[in-house]
Image (cartoon, rainbow, N blue to C red; front, top):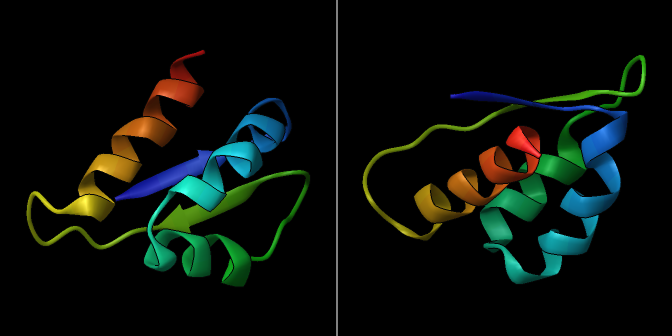
Length: 63
């Protein structure tokens, strides 16, 4: 799954990150920012904690 974090979402996502899984925090930290965006590529295997974190990011995107 790919989630784009743009300028508008950056601050809310960075506030949320400490409450997210270590895996999502690492994906975010390792994804380079370009044109004010981060394109997060997240591999989801099943209904685990990462899966729930992704839905939290989607809620921010829906704003």
